[in-house]
Amino acid sequence: MPRYEYKVVPAPKKGLKSKDIKGAEARFSHALEVQMNSLASEGWEYQRAETLPSTERAGLTGTTQAWRNMLVFRRPNAGDTSAFNPELLPAPQDDAPAQDGPTGDDKSDAESAEQNTAPASTPAASEQPKSKQPKSEPSTKD
Image (cartoon, rainbow, N blue to C red; front, side, top):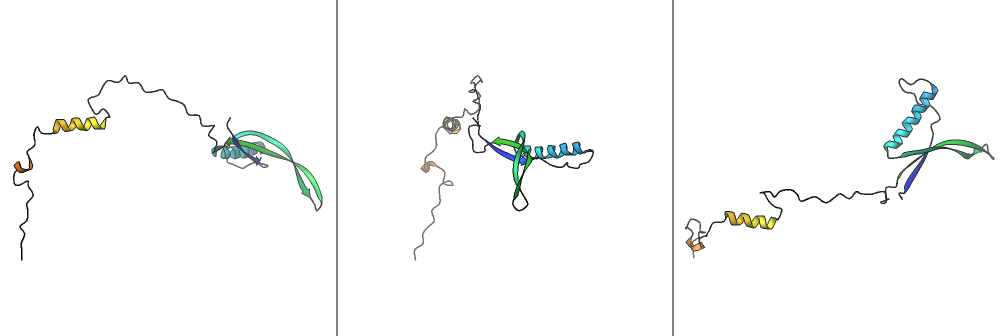
C-alpha cells in the first residue's frame, strides 16, 4: 500500500483578475484553477475541499468560531519504495542469425585476430638485420 504525504492549503477568498475574464464567479474559479495547477505541477494531487471550524481570538479575552475552506492535496511519499513497481520484461530471443563480426567473446576474437595476422615464422633476434638491432655506444675510458 503506497504511503502519501498531504498538504492542506486555504482556498482562495477573492477572485484573480486576468485578461478576458469577467465577473466575480469567473475570477474566483480562475484563482482556484491557478492555485490547483501550481500545486499539481509540484506533484500534488487534488483530493477534496473541506470546511473546517477554527477557534479564533476575539478581543482580549473572548473567542469566536470561524469556518475555513481548505483544499486537501496528496502525493506519494518520496521515501516510499512500495509505490515503485517495475515491470519485468521478457527475456530476449536468440532467433537472430549468426553474424560475421565479433561474437562478444573478447578473448576468442583477439586470439583469432592474432592467428590471422601473425606471420608463419619470425626470425630470431640474431637473424634480424643490423639496422633493427639496438646500437651499442662505444665506451671511452680516461
